[in-house]
Amino acid sequence: MLGRIKLGRINLSLVLLAVGGVLTIVGFVAYFQDNSTLNLVGFFYGIPVLLGGLALRAAELEPVSYTQPTSPEVLKLREEQATSTQNQVRLDVTRYRYGQEAHLDVALQKLGLSPSGQECPELSGLHETEIDGNYALVLEFDSSMVPFSTWVEKKAKIESFFGPNVRAELSQPTEDQVNLALVTLLEPAPAPVEA
Image 1 (spheres, rainbow, N blue to C red):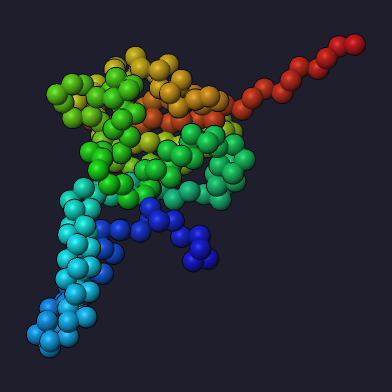
Image 2 (image 1 turned 30 degrees about the vertical axis):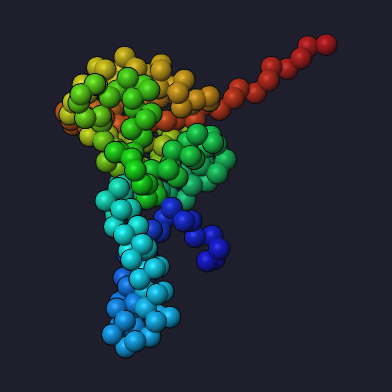
């Protein structure tokens, strides 16, 4: 079970701060006790690790949380139908990221949903559901700067960006929020060959 823990789900900045802090304290204590070996370990390893933890903390982007629990039926649909893109998006936004402004910021820029000089829509949550018998990953955006009409105009581009075998459904629960549902398109069964 421990081998299955994903590195992205661990807050690396806190781990580095803790390890660096302990090593630095050990270094200071060893300095005052004239223990040169521990002193060197504390200063040469502790301080850089501590500074690395501080740097990561400053550049940290926390995981997006689920806004509703995923039912066992939807989990089964995910296993059977989810595309690799849907799985990648879900995994990327539910883990710690470092050095990014916002989740999916590059994707939103490529889709033309990030106006120049303005903030891009912010992913505030996600949930998984079933739509018309198909698996759907619903991304919930706070979109005060980008009107819903712009999202609708970009629908075909969104589908090709997150495709293949995905259709986009857009909804606007409140004035400043947009929900983007990435719905799996099942490939139609091949037509029978007539002899």
